[in-house]
Image (tube, rainbow, N blue to C red):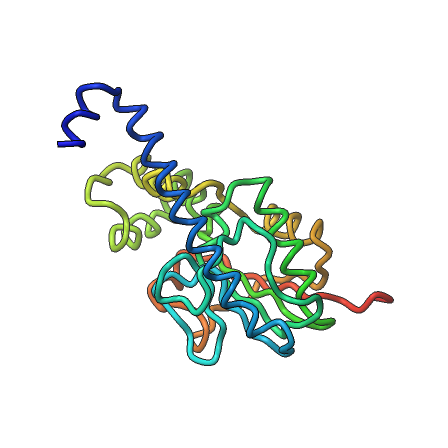
Length: 224
């Protein structure tokens, strides 16, 4: 009944906005629960955090996401509730592109730098947008589109449809990265020794190997 009334009394755009308000309200509630649960980690060191894990939780890690399978349901657009210099490694795969740029993406990377110990690693994987653009412009790189069919939406047929889905993913993606841009963000957050890395089968998702830019960044000692 309520849905029927709303449909008659509102526009589609307004209904989408109202859904967003409801969605953000749920996020806020989950974040509050996550903050309360995070207290158990406040005095711990050598933590291994898996940011934006979704349903892919890792054994031996503190898995963080608004997905209920996570150990902590935190909104990663907010400050991280961990002590400075308390983490050995932070990992995220296909998450940063879901965060608005330049904010709060910049703030998240700065928070990651804060809570890492000296010598700690931020290991990150994002969709390789440079590869997507090269594939569009150069026929010899067109294998990208064949691989993309495995996870892109069924309506993707033309190369431009695949490019749009890669960048937008039905509006879920907020920003696209190449190595130059990701390196710039990490440097601005304070990281050094920023390098591409190879796919790691013990850490990364097998289905994302061919489409992902993987990078490691290190929190250097002050004198470095």
